Length: 305
Image (cartoon, rainbow, N blue to C red; front, side, top):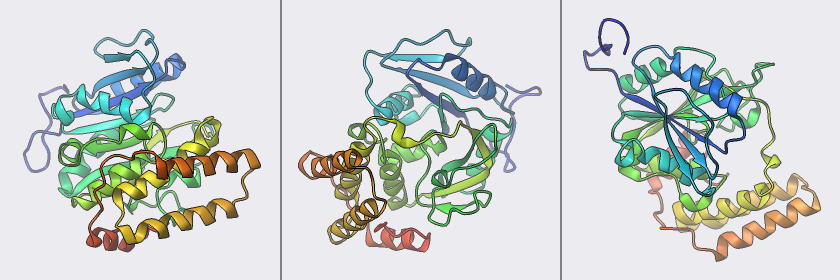
């Protein structure tokens, strides 16, 4: 707690309680410690932290950090869901949860405060996507700007999805629409949650002034990347889109994938995942309202691409 007692929001309300969830495989102890140190330096009331060991024992961590060690790797969304529940049902012990990659770093001390202020100022705001920047170059990769018009990463805007390891979510969102889809394991789980949140009336902001340092990487470094991306793309459509849009959305992504001329092994894995997406159970189907389709379109990303 900061000196002089709890801070107050401009409206006189107590500041939002903020927690943070860090998922780790236990293979980046130095980076994890640096991240936790950067969270501890955040201005205002203390950010409570839960570190989830996803199928691995955890290294020694700073005092006060809560831990959960899972006996096996349950995947990114399921691991983060377990972190949410560590803060009570649907994260109800706090008002806002930060989700941070274990090899990330908060270079600024005002990120938690900016999150509190943003959520207090906009009751419709449900999710904030941070800007990811390379710690050495300061460059933000185009794929890390969650909108189609991504040429200017320094422009903040309303968006239709968010970045999984660099974001803040109002816990009321989880309590209303549920958590991340466990079975996705990896890829597109953020968009699944984003679409459900938007359908429930929440908004999502990309904020360029809230920065997470993260080394530049390629998503294809993961062995299962191409299969998971394709399978989960199909699941995303089957779960969330009106029936008329499912073949349109998936047809567009099939053409885009072919246009990118992937290697033969990558294309084989992608097509295998695409087939799996149609044949494997995808979880409950709750198609979004057509007014949500229109909202996505007005925000610059109709759910056909």
